[in-house]
Every structure is written in structure tokens, then in C-alpha cells.
Length: 232
Ligand SMILES: [Zn+2]
Image (cartoon, rainbow, N blue to C red; front, side):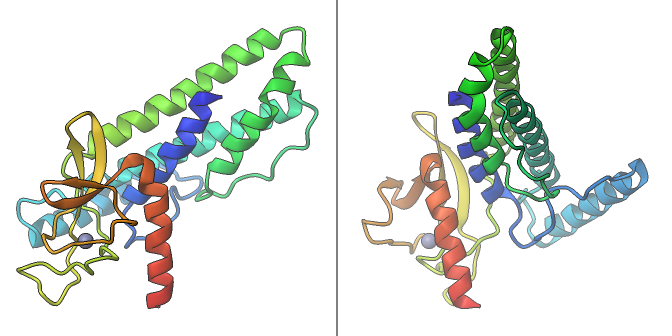
């Protein structure tokens, strides 16, 4: 149950690392190998273009990996919730769309797990199976997050400084990067150099830059959403 709760948190972080400029489903449903190859090709071409306009930056080269990780978690969460709900004599949740949020399925799995496990003679087997699934999800998420967090640029405009830097005084620059900070802390850091959020909005600073540790990413995501809604 702890693994499932942690997976739900990491899902938010990963979702934030998706390229927000490209709102497409986490995975297109029922891809044929041909379509998949085409998609990979398109993704590669797109990456090559980005590299061309930002030399030296590996902006979000790993985006297809994030989408894969997210859809893998959704698939596992859905299956886990379905089986555990059945075992707990509980109506199952509706099928998930390809771009659905896995968190309701994770939450359902957590809520019915005790009943599913204690209601059956072979409850221990159910418990071990659920534990294995949860651990696998968590491992996938952590691996994906770990692979891609080193200095990654987020294609987002900081709601506090508006992406204003010395080089781009008019704003709009992508100033956020994901950093592995000392103490095994993964954080989003606004490196624009002119960012000064009020103290109620930021509790951590790194080399004079505001930093938001992983635990605050869900809050951060909501904040960006709100900002975009107000801007549009
Ligand atoms: Zn900023």
C-alpha cells in the first residue's frame, strides 16, 4: 500500500516532465508496429529539430520514455484495481482511456486491498501478487525519473519570473531545470537568475535560485495549470 501511494506521487512528477507543449495522449491506443515505428521516427525527427535550435541542450529527448512509463503504470494500475475490486466484491472502475490518470486506479487498489486479502483463503497469494505489481510500478517510475532528471529543461514558463532573464528581459524563456541536488534531493530549479517568488511559494533555495523538491511538484503542477487558465 505504501508503494502504491508513492507511485501515485511519482506519477504526478513524471506527468510534469512530459512535454506540456505537446498535448497528446500518454500513448495512442492500439498501435501497430508500423504506427509505432512511424511515431518513433517522428519523435526522433522532432528531437533532431530541437537540437538544431538549441545547440548543446538535450531538452526533452526522453519524452517517449516518459510516455511509455506513464502508460505502463496506467496499465498495471488498471489491472490491479480490477482484480482487487473483483476479489473484494466491489464494482470495478470504468476502463481507462489511453491518456487517463492512473491515480484513481491506484487509490482504488489501495482501498480494496485489505478486503481482497482477508476475504479469501489464499489471501496471502493475493497480497504477494499485489505487492509485486506495486513494486514493479514503483521501480519503473523511479528508473524513468532517475534517467531523465539530470539537468533536463522543462518546456514551461515559470509563473513567478515569467521566464525573464538577463538575456531575455522580455520573458518567455524556459528557465526551469530538473536537478539532482546534494542530499539526494530531486528538485525543479528556476535558473533564470531573476526569480524571486515570495517565501510562501518557495521554501528551498539552491545557489540563489528558487528550488521545488519532488514532494512539491503536484502543487507546482496545479499552480502552472491555474496560471495557464488565467492567461488563456
Ligand atoms: Zn522563475
